[in-house]
Amino acid sequence: MDLTLIPHDDLAALTSWHARWAGLRVAVLGLGRTGFAVADTLVDLGVSALVVTESAPEAQASLLRAIGVPYVAADELPAAPGVPRPTLAEAGSAALADFGPELVIVSPGFAPTHPLLGWVADAGIPIWGDIELAWRLRDRLGTPAEWLTVTGTNGKTTTVQLTEHLLRSAGLRAAAVGNIGVPVLDAIVAPEPFDVLVVELSSHQLHYLPDTLTPHSSVCLNIAEDHLEWHGSLDAYIAAKGKVYANTRVACVYNRADPVTERLVEDAEVTEGARAIGFGLDSPGPSDFGIVDGILCDRAFGEDRHTTALELSTVAELAAVGLGAPHIVANVLAASALARAIGVPAASIHAALGSFRLDRHRIEPVASHADVHWVDDSKATNPHAADASLRAYPSVVWVVGGLLKGVELDELVQRHASRLRAAVVIGVERADVLRAFARHAPELPVFEVQAGDTGQVMPAVVERAAGVAIAGDTVLLAPAAASMDQFTDYSDRGRRFQAAVHEFYGR
Image (cartoon, rainbow, N blue to C red; front, side):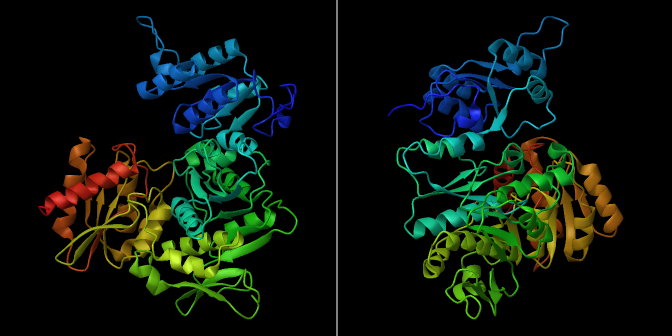
């Protein structure tokens, strides 16, 4: 195929896999899954790449060496005796100055306040994220897949997985990608093309995204305080989330119970003809998804949406397959709206919902003993997610704490104090959590598990929780905080909780 020859100082013209990328000098910041996917793709394009990262685990470093991409890792730099090791900003800026990049692609972990990004901005070098690169390259195998973009403070992964399941069940070639853990670039370079990509977008990814995407349909599920230490303010966080609706062509799906998401749709610059589609647990209007007498309904895409509704499922049917918690039902409605927007029949959605199962560590039942139920919702990594989880149970022994990411738990504790039997507090940032209980639930039994050996945290948690729980209680791991202070990630935290429960009961 003939290449479209363009000068490399015209990055705006690089809008196709088949454009002339070869010879472009691109620096990649970060070496997680996203960073490596970017570097690997750039090599395929013939780009001259350099990776700059805080650390380079041997497995990833060896892969970079195999594909011929040099890297600079701050933790590998030599330090003279008595002289501090250079910081990433110091070493990275020197490496970038020598390399002379025409473009920098930044991994989502780099906050906009990182001094290395300050150097890049001062040098006048354009900055993209991996999503921008993937969008420009999406025509590698011909007609690009449609993109359905999903964001929100909570429920993103469940909604993305649900949407993928609904699409695949209807016979579409679909993939769940993005912040869910599979880089979009991996789907772009897959050997067979997809019909639809369901793209989970974090606020970090959206921050670095210009108004170039034109997704088929999009959704912001909800908004609550999160990642404030990264964005700097709630307004900046909300502004990043709102980018998901920009240039949407068919359906902007929003949460009727969350006025912020509705405002984001109202303020968005969308493609002419795009519709606002609401979802919620109440009765739906003519452009909405909702619930009537326990029946999940579509009143947005039926032939006569003003007088009739299409049945998608029932709350009872969802509860029978573990999808009955209110916040999960809301995710089902949002996913159904995206699927219906792209043409999946209502009957197909009804059939597919019966075979969907939630991801691990999302309100996952662990065990029941003497009518005490143990539930792992380790994926509830912020107060908004923990709030939804707590609402699902009438009497709770709450396991809470970790890295708070700049948010407070006072409102959450106050709201749910009446349903709490006790609390077991974990994590290195326990002081703020304990103060919240002292202020808003001073009579509540609160047990503090000291930050020590990771392997001892959950056995201590289970012992304390079992000692206070009575018949009818749910011991709920819904930490409202990130996990990396004591655990590898939320999955590690959940696995250790489950193992400790089973060990406690001898099975």
